[in-house]
Length: 294
Ligand code: GUN
Image (cartoon, rainbow, N blue to C red; front, side, top):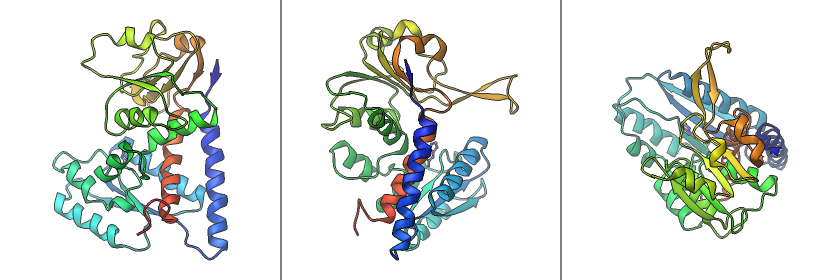
């Protein structure tokens, strides 16, 4: 069994990005600029956004954090998005989700100019991904593909079972794994809450990508000998042992599953750090106008 070290790979990629940024700047080019909108004070969102700002520093990017109160109106938030759409200094930006319940997330996501949508959530980017056109790929799926690539994991013709059908992870990773590319070229099955025989399907998987947000869902009896297991789960589970009172817990029972795997990602330290680095890569691509050149 080999542990997939997302922390080490993400550190390496941040270094690669920082080197490229310094080359761009030395040649008279513009330092990439990522802006983030944070509404309210959700603990998880605060922490994710703080990590993103720190990653910008490590990559040599400019970053701007725009904070708004929980009770900002939808129209006022859309107006702030419009300002960023029209700000020539901002290469890409994100609106941290989830948003307060009175705000329609779909309207917010669609308000972001798709050419600055480094989260890859806009329907234009999602549609382009599904037909294999250049686009911003959402960060977690992009991070998983990068891990498979850097560990030279053979995905061609393999049976990949995706657990979960979210717009942010399940659907885009299924799309990427079935695409005619490397990594990719897999035969993909997507399982979800209405799938009756998930255990049997998982047992036929060469690759399991668990993204349902259900702590410890994948147990040893669901995993074929030699399978590759990618754990996307990041649920905060109460824990008396940790200082902050909770522990980040994946969708996979790591201790019992790991001995059966050829490769497995830990939680934390697997997919999580790759997600932020993929956002950094998208920002670099936005800064270089490498995907949409207008
Ligand atoms: N909330 C949880 N994950 C994400 C993400 O990748 N981007 C944004 N904008 N919000 C999130």
